[in-house]
Length: 573
Image (cartoon, rainbow, N blue to C red; front, side, top):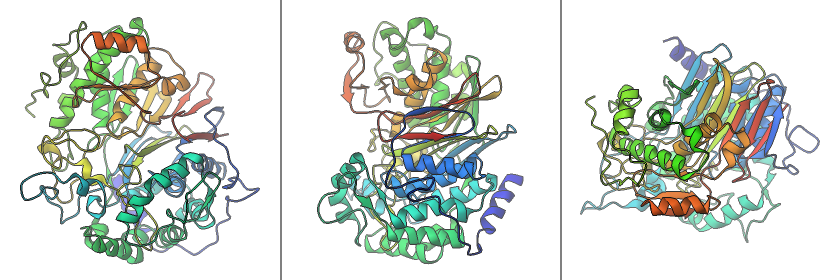
């Protein structure tokens, strides 16, 4: 009760914030120069650090800690900055999960996952013949769930030290005055231009005459105004008043169903983090409606009885064992996981050692399993997402995964408010047995109901060693998120890798259906051949995820890593 009361008090306290000028940390010659910055992939820092999807966001987080903030302050400021500088996934129109461990050992899980609007219904994406209309769940106004990110920010503020007006100011400055975009960002905006025009009913800052190019300045005046309303009025500055009105008007123009009532009634929820041990390390991850924490617990427990270290990194023996654990865990995801407020998820059983042993009882190290023969266990009871990791000088650990779901979400920009809405409704099972945009299959546990939160793959994770902070980790990547975190943990714990190698070595992924193993282009060709000879179907694909990690070294320094697969960047001091 105490936590819930604190959360409510923090939100109420934001209704009327005094209008005070906040000194800017953004600009030439200041802590964060939005016109001249570079990507930093790794660093060992003595006191505090941030790893995120964009250099400016990581720099803002560190500047906030240098100015008296803790890891929670940095996480809020970094997340709000990502909503400006990384519009493909950073957001105020989406949702996410925050997992944290305070310096005093208290664990915290904040669920601000999007929810289905009150007018949503189980068969809302089916035509009169019962066929799925996937375009409606993946693009445009009807694809959006009720946004949770701003509720999550204010739920986090309970644990911060600085006022929201100070934490949101860098994002306002970057939106109002602009920042220079990279080649990757320019390519993303150009590739999505037609979708922005098709699914938005008003002009947007993301579309201009001619093509975007590296070095252009992206200015978002409408987004700046929206952020100022939050700065002045707290959470009601988003969920009520002018911004809420703009969201609903945009929905009405495009046949969306989010209402003023949906927005006003949305709340972030506190969830008890999941905890388990793996080879002497204590692992903390997120509970349902995330599938991620259960999945990594299952996969690690399924391989724990095997001498994985002796098999060697990405030998056919270690990879085949890990694939088969992935296959079985994802079969369970499809059958048993959903929003615990609507469906009784058998968490205890799924995470038990006896259940892991039962699931691997038919494992054959000599040949490929077959997904049609591997069903869910019997129990009686964003690929465009983004992740950020923060650790401060006191040892507070914060891991946040936040998303719009697909790249640039629903591609719908709220007219007059300047931000993108999510396409998170596609993460429900729109029809039992029909895969979503990530190929994930679901059933009744994840069916659409008003107010229900869609099942997620987001897996913000913390690791303790000798009961002390050891690793903060997470990644985007849709259904590949849990397997990426799983492999990074095995890389560090079993193969004794540093965080840089653990994050950047080639990855593979199996999710039960489709029955194939996705591998990155730099995956060992000899191991690929051996797997194929065992009966596995392999599919080469582009980058899997963009993992961020902070690991505490024996000398106390924070080894901080940003994935090689994007513009991700670290900062610290």
